Structure formats: C-alpha cells, structure tokens
Image 1 (cartoon, one colour):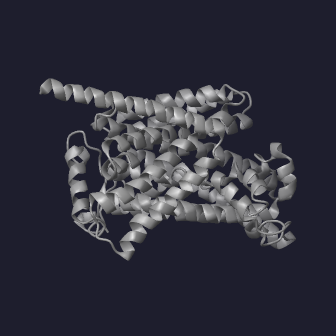
Image 2 (cartoon, one colour; image 1 turned 120 degrees about the vertical axis):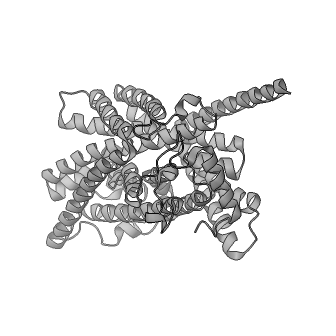
Image 3 (cartoon, rainbow, N blue to C red; image 1 turned 45 degrees about the vertical axis):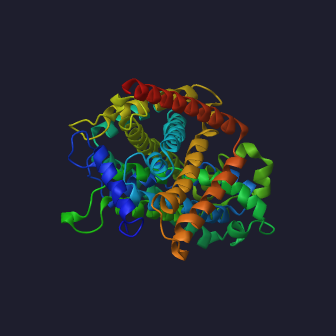
Length: 482
C-alpha cells in the first residue's frame, strides 16, 4: 500500500507530481479516467496474447524442445521487473514511467537517460508491430503493398489515440477480446486433437526438452523470450490517468496501476505457457529438425496449426495477429506519447509536447510526434526486404537498459532517498529483488545482437550529448541571472 512503501517520502513524491501538473482537473493535466480493466487492456494489447507465435520456432530450436520451460523461466525473471515497477509507481505516481522513477530515485541526469533509452523502445516497438500487421494483411491481400497496409494501420490507431484515452481503451478491449477468443479456439481445437489422436511429442517434452533438460540452452532461449513481455511496463505510463476509488473509497490510482502491472504479467505468462505447450505437443517437426532448418523457424507455429488443426484455423490466427499487432502498436504509441509529454513538461524536450488537448484530455502534440517517428520507421522498414529483421534487432536494447535503471531506482529511492529502515522485508523487496532483476537485464543485454548493441550504444551517446548541452545551457542561464 502507498502508506507503507516509503511513508512520508511517498507522500512527498505524490505532492511533487501534483505540483507538476499531475492533478486531475488542473489546467493542462491528464484526466483520471482509466479503470483497472482499461489498464489491463492497454498492457495486454501491447504485449499481445499470442506474442509467442512469431518466435515459437526459434525458441523451440534453441531450447532443444523445452519451449514452455523457457516461458516459465522468463515469466519468473520478468516478475522482478514488474515488482520494481509496482514499488515505484506507488511512490512516484507520474506519467513517464521509468523516466520519472529514475529521476526521483537516482538523479535528474539518470532520469533523462532512462527516458531517452525508453524512447528507443516506445518509438520502435510500435513500428515493428505496425510492420507485422502490414505483412500479415499483405499476405491476405497481396495486391496491396505491405507499406500501404502499414501506413493505414498507423493512421487508424493514431486517430483513435487522439480521440481520447477511454475511447481507445474501449476499442482496444474489443480487439483484445477477439484475440482471446481466437486463442481460446486454438486451445480447444488443440485439446480435441490431442484427445483424439494423441501427442506427437512426449507430454513432458515442452518442459524438459528432448533428450533431457539443458539449462544453458533454456537460458539462451530466455534472452529471446523476454522480448515477448515488452509492453506490460507501458501500464505505468498511465499513472496520472488511472481513476481513484469509486466515491472516494477504495484503492487509489497508483495502487491500481501497481496491481495492473503485476496482474498483466501473470496473465501473459499463463497464456504464453499454455499456447506454447499445446503447439509443442502438436508440432510435426522435432526441435533438432527445426534447428537444422532455420528458414522454417519463423513459420513453425503456423505450420503446426495448418498441419494439425486445419487451414481455416491457420487463417483465423493470421487475421487475429494482423489486427492484434496494429492495436499493440496503438498501446505502444499511447505510452510513447505519455513519455514525451512527461519529459517535455520537465523541460527535457521541447515544451510544445507538454500541451494537453482540452477536448480529449490527451497530449495531442506528443502523440503526433510519436506517430510521425513510428510512421517513418515502420514504412521505411516495410519498403526494404530486410527491414523487419533490422528493426526487430534493436527494439529491445532501449527497454532493457531502461529496466536496469528502474531496478537501480528502487534501490536508490528506498535505501538512500527515503532512508528506509533496514529490515529483512525491506532488504528483500528493495535490494534483493531489484538486484536480481538487474542481473537478468545485464545477462539478456549480453546476448543481444551486435547490431542492437551498436545502435543502443549510439543512442546512449546521443543522449549523453543532449544531456551535456542541457546542463551547460542551464549553467549559463543561472550565471546570467547571477
């Protein structure tokens, strides 16, 4: 609860947030209209209930067949990050998510770098999702180029985001319900097939692997699987738009956001484990055969559905993924807009993006800025044969580095800024858990591709230059006034 996590420090953080314009009803403030269900919708939309479909074959081959064990380990690993988000949103209930947390728990400079690195994720993950949607729709309607479908998806979802956060959440809920129904059809169809004809693999193989459990192979696959979870953290970006308890009673907005972050991760983990377990049992190719044919790994899930459950379900899954990817991008674009808004409000980005539209209550200029960058990246990638591979290789670096600063922020806030009294429970929550999360982040970043590391490093250098220029400008301004 907010009253027990940080005490007076939490109250100070809340007062600071309100003073910066985070109070509902103040001029230029975001509106507190999002319910707990809305928050879950945004989180699950961004993650996508069937996120493992695209990387199922890669994980199956890398883990030697233990794909469900991979997602079990990945869920446990990402739980540390979810827990750190839940801790910080209670004491720093501000838009901007990890930017605001690092700013409060570490320093102004660390906060800027956290926001800068998170931007790389929030601007490019939607671009990848839009591109997935464009490719899927092109496969269904080949006469229309992928880049046209991609641009159309950007325009439609941007209009929904500009309409208002509740409107986007309602439409998103319908899309999410559709995705869940399609996933349910797959699960039921798979169970019927397994009961009628049995499994093509051993019942325990998705958990133990073919020929025995291989820890190194599973951990290697985990570094890829965690990318399926990027997006649950976007929930924290809506901290200033989460409604409080009804009629002044019940849990406040920050507590709802904290619960939504944790709930979203658990739900996603269960959905990922169930679908990969069933697909692994039905897959016609062994993990070894799949590893020997890397060109077939990207289509492995669809090939399994086609061979075992029929072409009709194959097409249904494809359509669901096409629509779901566009709305995953909608949630990502909304989160990017909030991050740009928060950084602009603190004068870390051009102040024009700190304006909130009176009619819709959304940061319209920040949303349009995020949409333009995402549109350029997505359409540019759609016009290149290797666009998807290049774009996908760099999206995770910004998010993972920002996660690292998040974990450091928990330690910095509770142990040093709030001067929390040492105790077993406090050490576990605010030192051990974030330290484990930080270790996971470092391990995953070490496994990232060379291209991703280079792009991430260059983006960090640019951020450091911008930070240095800002500091010099502020120092000069202060000296002039003196």
